Amino acid sequence: MRRVSTALLAALAAVAGLSAVPAEAQTLRHGRPTAPAGCTGTAPVVCHFDVAPGTYDVTAVLGGATAGSTAVTAETRRTMLAETTTGAGRTVRRGFTVNVREPEGEPTGASGSPGLDLRFEGSAPLLAELRVTRAPRTPQLFLAGDSTVCDQPGEPYSGWGQQLPQYLGAGVSVANYADSGEGSQSFLDNPALFGAVESRVSRGDLVLIQLAHNDKQTPAADYRANLTAMIERARDRGGRPVLVTPIVRRWFNADGTLDNATALNVNGLGVDLPAQMRSLAAELTVPLIDLTALTKSRVEQLGPEASKSLFLYDEKRDNTHTSARGATEFAALVLGELRTQRLVPGHLIR
Image (cartoon, rainbow, N blue to C red; front, top):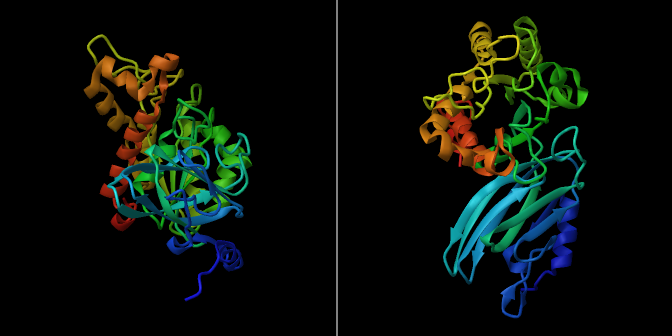
């Protein structure tokens, strides 16, 4: 049987609208597999594909002759796969779906690089095979939020939306349009924010809305009107809006609780923003993820000292923005509600 060259495979893949590197196309250099076509390096393995904005399914075979431990990020530091171990001589196949857009991170931030970027990292990354295919009809999970949700461009910052994809398998894409500094009015007014979400929503897509941290002087009536407009416009497109109350701030009382205005996002006008969101969800029959209550419970459980690791207290004396650990834990809380409320089918959850 004739062996097809890697170059020819790549050319055929391009014509078919995909990038593929089957296992038989791998070659050996000094007894070790070379990186798949489109990829360079070993720790990390960095891969780039010149594809247009859209949705792409990725299938990766991890592992090799030696023991490995591989995590995967995409685009602007989105965690697509948590660190996964493989024994010597063993491989595992993992799939996920990536949203490729311009800009690739925060909608009002830097453009990033065109196309799809993947990084296979971890303590001992091993990539044996990689396949990328277009998935234009994949359901989307849109995120409308602020800096606690967004794809943060640099360490040590991380938004919970940036960590959510690792909990989902192939067949659903997280399209994170959250943007730093945005409140309910500015997110609604900017065409690059809610306008971009609205124009891309298809029937059945989820639209998760967590906007409150920057509504510091927003009257209750205006806040409810802004959220109502987003809900109605998402529904008009066939989308399924979900209200998500904001994560707490790490601001303890002397008794070790977070029962104060700063922690619980009561704004400068005395408006209890999470309470307004809960009330509006009931009024408009919208699913609600009470992330305020969930994160309050978790932060209080850890207490004043241990909870510092969820936020950027040690690095920045920041009690609002989350570390990678905190964002990952809070994303897991969101996922738990998506599963419990059957907003995402179980077979799409990793």
